[in-house]
Image (cartoon, rainbow over all chains, first blue to last red; front, side, top):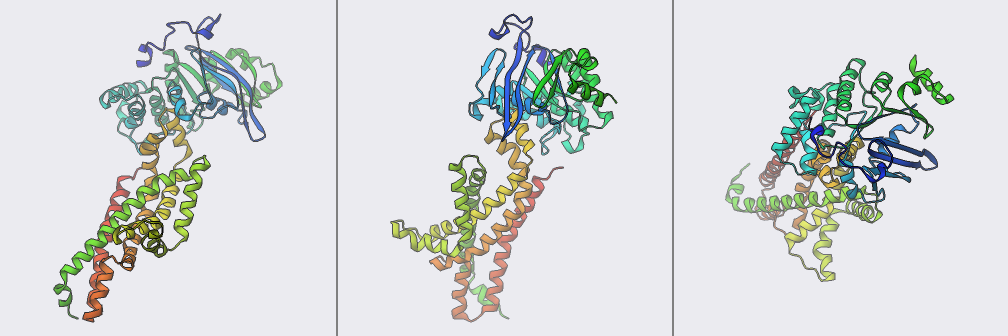
Length: 268
Length: 215
C-alpha cells in the first residue's frame, strides 16, 4: 500500500515532543475543552497516539467521543487545550483556510459515510488529491485504483454511492480518506449504521490498515474489534476520560462504576 | 382573421423579439450571477457579509419591478448617473430578479446536508472549491426548477422595459395595433414569440435537471 512506502509515515526522526517515549507520538491532544452554551461536552480530554498505534475510544452515546474526534481534526474548534501533530503545535485559532493543510494530514471516516452522491466511487477518491494536492488526473486515478484494490472494490470504481451497499460505501470512504495520504486516521463509529453482515468487511479493511502501521483513533462499539486491534482503550463518560489502558484490562477488569456499568450493558 | 398585418411587419416583430430576447438574456445572466454570491453571503457567520445580503433580498423582493425600473431610468440621473434605456431596463429588471434568484439558490444550498460540508472540510478541500465541486452540483436539483420559473417571469416581465422607452416586443406590438386595429392577430403573434423564447429556457431547465440528476 502506498502509505507504507510514504517516507513521512515511518519513524524516521525523533520529534521534539517524543522525549522519553519509546516511539514517536504522532498526534497528541492535551486537555481539550469544548462547551456548547452552558453544557461542557469535553472537560479536559487528553490523548497521545504513538506512530502506528490504534487508540480505541469507547463510552455511551453523549459521552463526548465523537465531539472529541472532531476536535482532533478541528472540524470543531476546542475552547481550550492544545493539539500536536508529530510534535508540532497546531494553532487552533487560525482561520479555517489555514487549518486545511493540517486536516489533510488527518483522514476521517464518518458513521454516515458522507460520500459525494453525485460522483462515482473513483471520482469521490480522486477529487480531494486533485484539488488540494494538485495531483494530475492520471496519477490520482492510478493511486485511487490502488486504494480500491486495497479495499477490494476495484470492480466498483464506476458505481455511484446509491448503487453501493453500506459496507461498500464505507470502504470507498476509507479509500477516499487514504487518498490524501494522511498520517493519522480517525474513525467515528464507522460500522454503527451497517447491518451486521456488512460490518465485517469494513472492520477487515480497518484491520489491514492497522497491520500496515497506520496511526488510528477509533470510536467504536465493536468490542471484539477493539479487543483484538487496539493498543490502548480510553473510556469516556461525561466529557472526561475515566479509564485508560490495555483492551483486556479495560474490558475485563473495569475499576470505575461507570465503566463497570458500561461493560455490563454492552456485553449482553 | 388575416395575418397579412403580421407578414407585412415581420421586421418589426423581428426587432422586437431580438430586443426582448437580449434584455431577458442579459437580465437572466446578471441576476443569477449576482444572486449566487449573495446567497452564499446571506448565511455567512460574519454580519458584515450576511446583513448586506439580507438587506438586498428584502428591498429587491419587497419593491415593485416597475419602481426599480423607473428608478434606474428616471431616478439615477438625480445623482448624476444617466443610463440609456436598454441598460436602465436591464439594471432595474436584474435588481428585481436577483432577490428571488438569491432565495432559490439559498434554499438549494441549505438542502445539501451539513455532512457534505464536513466531508469536504475533513479532506482539506477549501470552501470555494467545495461549493463549486461538491455543494452546488448537489444543490442544483433543488435550485433549477424554481430558478427557471423565475426566469420565465423575467422574460415576460421584460415588457415593462417599453415604459422606459425601450422598443421591445410588447411595446412595438401595441404601437402597431394602435394604427392597424388588428389586435387579435398581432397579440397572438406576440404570445407565440414569448412562448418560443420561454420554451428554449424551459428546455434548458430540463437539460439541467437531467444533468444534475443522481441517486
